[in-house]
Length: 537
Image (cartoon, rainbow, N blue to C red; front, side, top):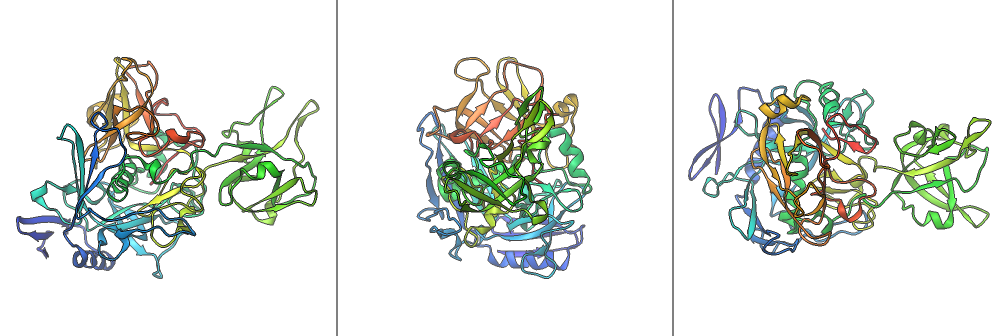
């Protein structure tokens, strides 16, 4: 294999001819050229494949590793326990990743590296975005066999196998870049006031399909927010490395972390800890994230919905640092990641002479970057992959932080018969909030079938289907519960028809075993933006 260039493009020379990998009409920086050369020297041509059974033929979630994937062992890690991961043995460069700063091309949003972690120009604060970068790859989703699907990836084109470039590596004009970059974290509001992928930021709430169009464009042309491809990415690598179509069999994510506790001690003293009973303290693991505040006044009763700004008045989605027993022997201090200047008291908030709201602690989304503590460059969660209270990362990208992830490029059209047509914007397509425009300019990627009841009912997912061009995904077959097939829950959006719904992925704080890579919630209009609705760059 050789990399060749002429005045207009770069090519990989294969036995089957020249495959374009780069449009040189956009000048390469020194860094880009260095990365391109580095990856070109490390491409092995290995082909990794996993067979995933269709639910109707075999309801298991577990697949079979084939070709160069056969025999490779993968185990998730934590911040204290290192699982075996043959993909990081040095023999499989496709799976090696690094944090980077990146910008996006104005024409189609393709990401380009500007600095690598460990170099002087790399930053994690300010007007920058942090991504996870690995070499570009090629893939194929083969659903032609009635009994199983085949997922195949390689660091080389392999035209004889029908592989195509992964969408994040391919520009709208069909040329590809040598790297694959995706946002490392869920977006928070950075110091420049813009939505960015940076460690340490609490996820910015109240995102919607419609406001994402405006919110991300504030960073410049080409910024549209992440689409379904970011979720499909983890599905592919979970299937290849973990030989499973259920993310739950590898990592639980923040999916059972829905508590609200009143302060167990009322005090006028300002402190950086929240007092709870010893029994309640057992339910608050270190490293989880919480808010402290008080409920809104709902005609003389406390409205403790997390959408109330007052719920976050004293501490807004901050990390639990440590727990210490209080002198009375009955209560525990939950110390929070806030400065002394933000210390608070726990006396009820007085609204008027007839109503005061107690100070409460609410579980919240995981702050970005908690998975950076996972050992080395392994996939996994801090503390635990199974306690349902910590996020996880796959190939450097953080997932399931406790809120839905709104797809920027994909919506569902509710058909009268209960099925849903999936519309997704191909690369370079202008994103729209207008139904007529979406239906006429977005790609019809596939259809979510009706339930077995013949109505628009909710169901557990047996199979997912994928679109190779856009990497859009959708539930394609009904399953039978949270332990077979994809294992996740699909919410069809009710009996309405002739309308579009947001594509809400992953699940929230309370969805438990129904959450995961295949979870999909279609109950919100395109303008719906709530405290549990998050987004990525």
